[in-house]
Image (cartoon, rainbow, N blue to C red; front, side, top):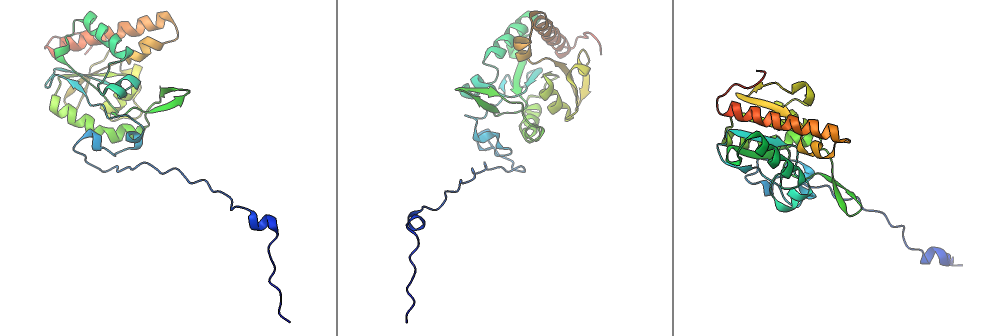
Length: 229
């Protein structure tokens, strides 16, 4: 007697296989890459979500270089550094300090905008140390090409990148001339801090320190002694 083949229950026969969520593909990263252009850079993963890389801008062989943290939302869209509200405050501070734009090259320690979504907005997210180190490739090129006499670190991330010290503390380096790599480095607040500090008095103090640091940088760049050395 031949055994009859069993048919599966209707619910089993009709059931669809359970869907499995596919992991999101990781962005292409080549930590040892030596790209010729910023658009081709894959040294860290920030390139994937940024609109574009944002190189430094200003006069070649400028005596003063200013280094910020990273492009913001406005800079990411425009492809130029310091064009948003922080850039406007920096322009005002330079004017007050008597520093002319032709004497300045402005850039960032990290060239791609790192952000996280908040509703329809893209909010700044602090770069990780590995991202700062990956982008040192571009900062080294700018330092070599511009060869500034004085470099101003605008904020903690810039100071860590310039000193190649992940433990550098910003306020410990205020009001000092730091000799590093054959250059004079000054440290002050990032302009965004002077915009967003919690109270008016703190914002005013931060702006005053930025102006004072710019003034000292101008004096040093033109061979004058200024302040504590």
